[in-house]
Image (cartoon, rainbow, N blue to C red; front, side, top):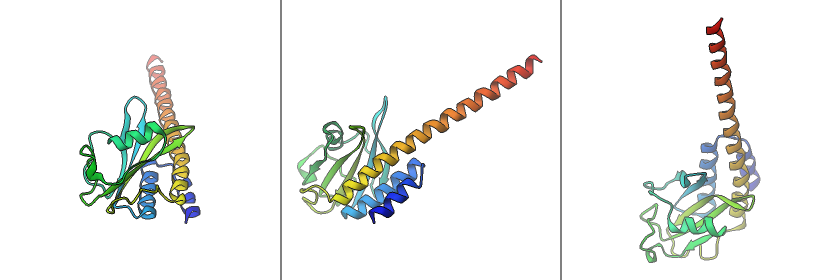
Length: 171
């Protein structure tokens, strides 16, 4: 299954499609209720980039997500009811985990999952989910680089067109 997912992740450079796939697979592999992927955007910080079965969009990253991103390690909330500041993505949620998506020694994002079972993530997550996150980090980085290249090429094409128009108006 992991090989199939790896191939699927490498088959697209569309960031939205990629994040949707990561979430579907992560929720399925962990038997979670729902999930979100938060990406760290330069100058913006953590923002929700994809959601799967999650209700409502939080105005800011929950403390659990920020903690995982800063510590570069998973953060677990065994019982979401013990943290009055935590706003669950699903009303049935009883536990949550936030796992950093690491690239080059830094968190480029966080995968957040919730379960209907209290303590569901008390022992972390299975190795296949860790491998999925590692594959996802490479694929997210590739998709971001591709998007940047596409924007730069578009700007270059626009500059060439403007130069042609200006040149034509002087002739």
